[in-house]
Image (cartoon, rainbow, N blue to C red; front, side):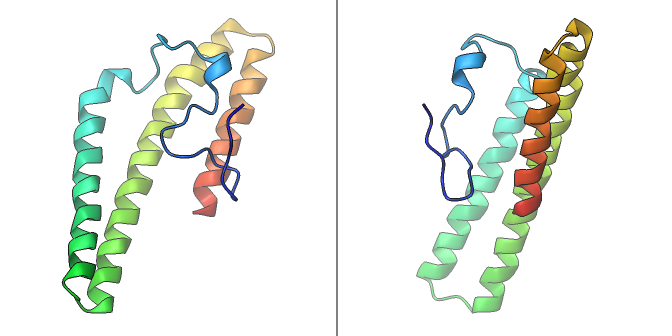
Length: 118
């Protein structure tokens, strides 16, 4: 059983849906994996920059500007990942038919809801 935080989201690095997904499955983001990792490393650099700014006592508004940029970068990444999920995982479930499509749509809807709360 996977634990969640106060907002119902799984902790970073967790596999909230591990039982229903194979460890060797190919997900929608697979074709762009290297690009995604590069993008995440850039975002990680932005976060490290925020840490430096705080450590160096940079003006509050300047830090907030960088927080906003980092947040937008993560949101943009999340939208790209969501699009790939819809195109691959949800579309595959639709082709298979049955109740799997309902589960995938519900899963995507919940993910969108979590994104909108941020």
